[in-house]
Image (cartoon, rainbow, N blue to C red; front, side):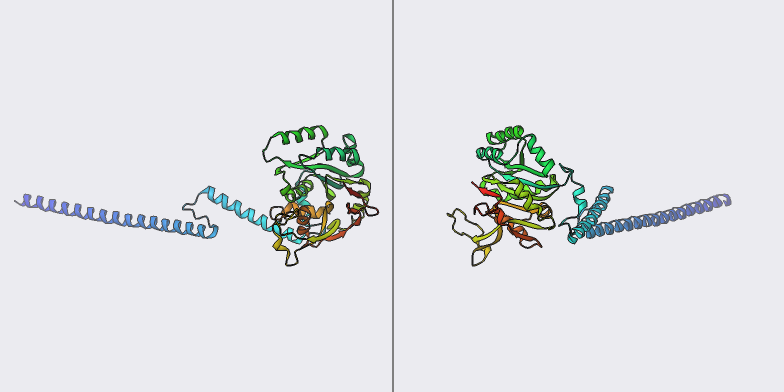
Length: 343
């Protein structure tokens, strides 16, 4: 009996201890689960905080942080710092012009030697006779054209865009003529059209200053005959002017009638008197390198009007620019000493 009672007591004690051990294990497991859950919740909360902080600072609005995202943010911030530094530098507008020298150092130039002038003769698809007449009258061809560049520092090129029907017979004819004469600037991103002459002139200056390092850049119509030696002498007399706009300055009435030959769609911008501000005649005018650089940098936001001479004048009217009313550039007046004549 005693043996059986002892056995029962031992069994009860063992069972009690097992229940205690199980209870302790359960409590430990529960505490561990709470701890782990708490850490996971804290990590999750920290992750949400970091995501929200990233969204707040970068404005990306993404839902996860990755290595790629971090690298992109670092790159973006670096670019922003560089842009801020560049804007500060441009704002200083060094005495040489509207852009510092080292910006040009990154551009490849067609010529290492400093040129006096790059002259662009604006032409169109149907004006081959005009081009041939100019080649015979005042624009050298072949080896003589290269010699002019080397000896007198003057580059001359016909300037033309592309056909609205890219690759058509007009484009092919210009390509053939260009391969034969080697005296064209073909503006591949410009569609040739009388209504787009202002944009063409802007594109020419941007192209020219990006390819040749010259003191001056000049635009001429393909019905104008020029004395190159005389033009060179006139330009050389203004070498001491860092920002100069040279031409036969004029003004005139702004026409608001659509049927008029010189209709200006934005006539209302020119005031109640409807008179243009002073600007150089489009037959021939020249600008210094600093102004050509200014056009190149700001070409995407420079406004163009119906006429390229008015457009060019509008680009400079609000700048610290020397406007030179050069009588020798008045091609239509046949004035004494004129360097040009309009056909």
